[in-house]
Image 1: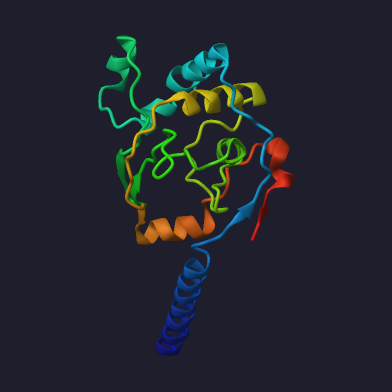
Image 2: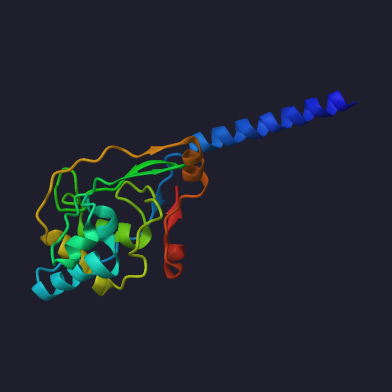
Length: 195
């Protein structure tokens, strides 16, 4: 009797493991539809200056997207750290590389429209429809602040700095399949759909 119970329990556990593995593989490339905010970068120096403050101080984008190790010291001296990406983050979920957000057309955001950048910031959805990892800080930004940030990013010198693809571990693939979703503001939840 005990042997029979163990046999059926083992089969049930095996079926669950296989089911989760198959579902995880099938859900690795989920995409989402999200609106493109009507944001257009400005060349107004005051708007760019505001965007600089938001990017380097208030929202802290520089802390992840700068390859510099001494960001705080650079900011204290009034220097502008590069936003060319390159930081490598090792986690139990995998190895992640922070992207280049300078206006370089090949390796940065130079080939993206203002609306595509705004969609990443507000909804956490990339140009290809994939969800970004949930570290972005722009979800609560007003259109005015988002315009300022994008204007500042557009004003930077383009830096070519291609990042390797992030590599998900086994637990990271499970998280990507079932946990990682767009970080959508509550007021906009109905406007984002999954494919």
